[in-house]
Length: 403
Image (cartoon, rainbow, N blue to C red):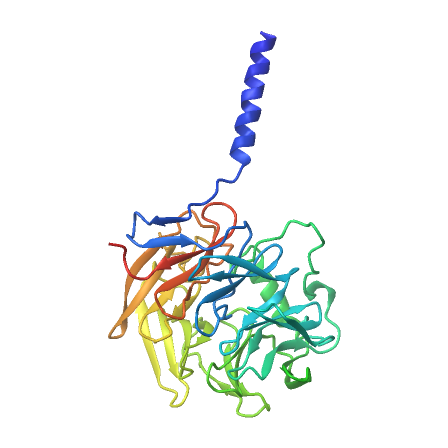
């Protein structure tokens, strides 16, 4: 009897240990529900592509820069090889669209690294920008920009400390993590003094402008106009006038969207590649009627593309040629709470409506991690991050359906 019980115990231990192991995700497959080819780009658990408006691609699109537990690496689309280019964790990462340089922060210091030679330069040692949010590079790569807190940050709103050596990295937190709504209410009400800033990449000079007690976030530069910056008033979307543009000399402050009804929300704004349009998620009202809005910067003309509750996505994007769009779907705790909305979507405009196509089934994806799908520079693939097989990895789905 004793040997029998020992055998059962050993079997249970073996089962638990085997179940605890992470099965390596497939390298490539055809999604049986969509017919599209999906490829895993990363090798290391915890690898992550960037936020949906943070460029990670080189100028000619041959390489993708991404984060790993060890630092920053590149994926070569031609050779499929991965190469580490920065050792040690890096924050607020963005790749220049003209040069082959990646810009990032460590604490209060700002760096640039050449993607091919790995040559690294400290741009500025004590920029005092870690208290803010948003990190962008302008069109001719002369300026970096973002937002920063002026003065001391209350302890409850201080940014997290850098991870300790050998600590288990935490996955990027999505827009729908538990407690975010309460945090946003408290942060908005705190009225902490902030300002926008620029950093001269050549000299390291830091300049501040547009002082405010609003919560300034999601700073982005126009991809074509070197002096045009977009930012948002962060907070519960139904309480803030979110989307704004401004010149880097502090002039021409402009609100992009004005609410037309109670509980109308607009956000997750981004520039199109040609710099002519700003796109954003629009709901009239929240969680009921869904659109992707297209705002023409020069004229102020607004075009709206309707989509269903199920098709709504946490983040949208647009192809480099501006002809097709993407969405990364939404989970059960997302704003839309759409039934069976966990997909990577492709959208094609048909008049004032989007015609959708499903590319990847994300039924097993936990949306506390945002997929943040982005088009490759040639427009043929969508790159996204996912935990659908357990650990976070980077994947790409082909826009064209497999034969």
